[in-house]
Image 1 (cartoon, rainbow, N blue to C red):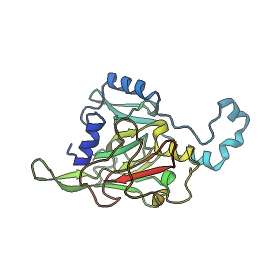
Image 2 (image 1 turned 135 degrees about the vertical axis):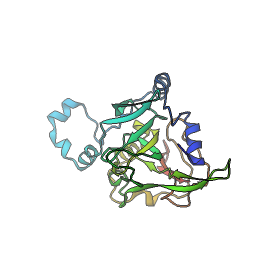
Image 3 (image 1 turned 90 degrees about the vertical axis):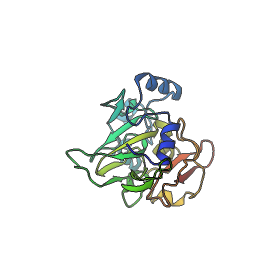
Image 4 (image 1 turned 90 degrees about the horizontal axis):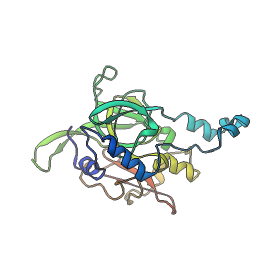
Length: 252
């Protein structure tokens, strides 16, 4: 698949292969290194026995909002084969595929658009992230012309839009690379800092040209490449700065 400079840089730093995905051994090694599965803890994290005794907990607004976002399965490329796994099995660097109606299973960046019997090659990907960021409009990714820096030839690449755990694909389909799982997901940061669910667009209050912090293995730092000039075209990575206040982002 054709990738923009920023997408190639991200894929390289995550040490993954968009065409083959990760191997079983690589997944095992990354899970051992991270020490976690792709599990996002709810706003009120209590043992099942307590939740059964106190059913009112499930009706607290933040818990109701959380339940509405939870993904179940993910289609992931492992050892060159697409297969469906429970979302908890995902690791940073996994290549995943989503289509209309799917819930985004982890924080990820779009690499390509897909064609299937449902979307029939919709020219635009739309993902509803209102439950995470309170953005009014769905996030959008289209194919745009970009000049290849190596060949100086113009090619079509897909806008590398950042998606978040819990978003819903409302149009089209895509292939994306996982950038954060579990406690490193953006929604986990919101829950940990008491900002979930956000009452208004939380991204409007973040500094525009901040340095990216956190983001799981290999994602911290700066994405290179001149992929866009605004939030609608490019990678928008939002992560937490652990131990400090509170979130920063960068768009490339």
